Image 1 (spheres, rainbow, N blue to C red):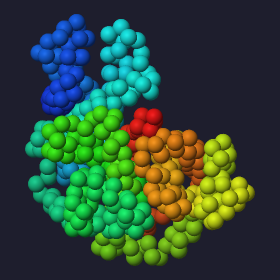
Image 2: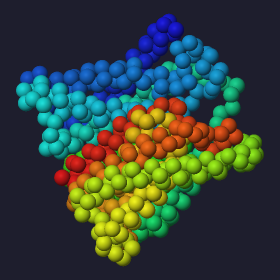
Image 3: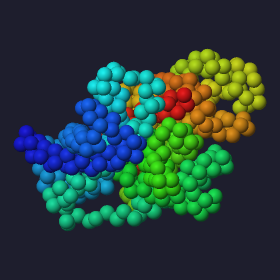
Length: 509
């Protein structure tokens, strides 16, 4: 066991150093574009660009080696790897596929990059320069461009570790006798999911949302261009994330992660470079794209759910499991239990949210959904909506949250999603005000975000306590959903929650 671990240190270190070098080159170019490369040299009392590049690349290689040592086994060797297995044994167990773990490398890299934004520009650099800790909203806003740069660094680092690891272990892990899985059906299925999601997106959220989506990607006001963009996004999502999707609930979060990543990579970086020749990493640039970001997040969630459903239907049509599942009379009962427990749990979450609503005097606005103004009517409508959302949580996450801790975080993220979908989108649309995807609306709605987070956390934890007394999974229903056992949830939680909380706070301020 120890010998195998030592054998994996060498490739992990080598891969991490090289990946860190690649990430450092990209990070350095970003700092040059931001005209901030001299800040790195100032840490050692110099103004030389050469010194700055040297420090940057050396630090990047160390940070890359640390990342690889931490996540090499999961991102490259795969979650099924155990220290008691040789590389040959693992290759006999499954044919190695770089694409299968690319998603893991990307999401861990993004979370890792965000961590180093806190450790670097907000902590180490101000301390080393004698300014002390700068943990304030103003400091975060001033270093927002470097946040984007760190996210790009993490994205490049995580992807490079997986791709370099692919080459390193290609001869050891590829099973030549195993049939190679065709990837084009996945892309086609993802493209179909993207187009279907765009239709639902347009119908539910209206023309304003479509305009925000179009402006976000700078595409002509043409249905064919819109559909092509949605299909391309769906195809890429399918190729990268298919092997990580375990249930509809976690797919929601993968969709949010994909939306955030696409926002950083496309309008803020690549599209801006192509169209303007400059990076759009400033806080002002982020505010300009805020409406499109919210639209992309909601579209990505719809796309992810649609793709996961299509994948499961495809597997069901070509699997004998469907026949076993049809004979399982408890499947419908378990679904009813999940929905009903979610609705009951929402009572606690709805009451927790009511405190925020009373403080913000929002109950009359909620009553306006049914043409009334009374706070009592608003409270009743609020609790009915809470029950519906709670039932939906039970349906989506019934087999995703296996512990109270996991339930807490799934609930927080689900609350964030409904903040985007509720007070910023559906509610103002129903009231005839149109979607409210502006920095001002986001800033004014921040207290409501707190309420939605409280609602999601309370609902999820009560649901878990209720569901803990009943087994929801049946052996015959594996083709429908699988438990989230691969463990990328921690990176998803960190990445989505931190950006979900930071962006409203920084952009809306």
